[in-house]
Image (cartoon, rainbow, N blue to C red; front, side, top):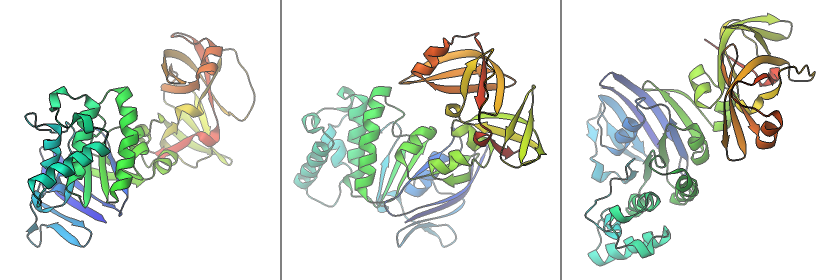
Length: 353
């Protein structure tokens, strides 16, 4: 198991965070740029010494500032995938991989490097230099180098960010398999909640240097602990004032209108609802049903993503609905179209502000 705790000042950021990762588990550190995610990776790898902190991997203590323990990076069995891959431009692919292998003969290093490249589907690119490789190929070379030293810990900094959309889809599948095969704790840094949900077993949400909530993707999406977490998960977030009405809660939205929730709350709240839980109806629709909340909106954008359509909306506050392609086509949506956004009270979650 990996356990990291770090406190230090980094420019304007007060980093004070702790997390644990189980054996063969993958944890994603998710949050915006500048939140301290990469700094925590660097602490774990020995590339950044905090003012106070500890790093324990298995039975070993790699860092304990109070006891004066600080193992240098080369004594920590860490496989580190840097965001820009950090390949040596003057070395071939196999030599980049061999660079991470120590304690064996040159012939053994070369053999091991070629075996890893074959495993990653790059046997025919072993002699190519990074400049001649595609983004996906560079990523796989960097991954091969990261696992070449048979690490006790795998650290991946924004592993998919440098790839185009088509390459990212293929690489994410390969990356998931690699993490599973490695059988060691793995930590991934990402600003993308969907990517974190795809690659990791659990997600630690980081804001302004602190871990604000940890859980599975499903747990975070179903019960965000703050408006920040709700927004990160992709939920629509609106603000208003809540009051009880029988067994339900009514929220008067800032900007006008109201919604009802089965959550209990009073006073200032944030209302969260996921885009796929919002349906759209024609402006003059007066349908009855379980979608208790109905808000008059104006379409601001229509974007097709795969087999789904994301529809930007302006009501009392901005909203986004996610529809099926046939459903959106049936409504003939375009910017300026008036409609009604409808969603269930049970899908309407409330977070205190």
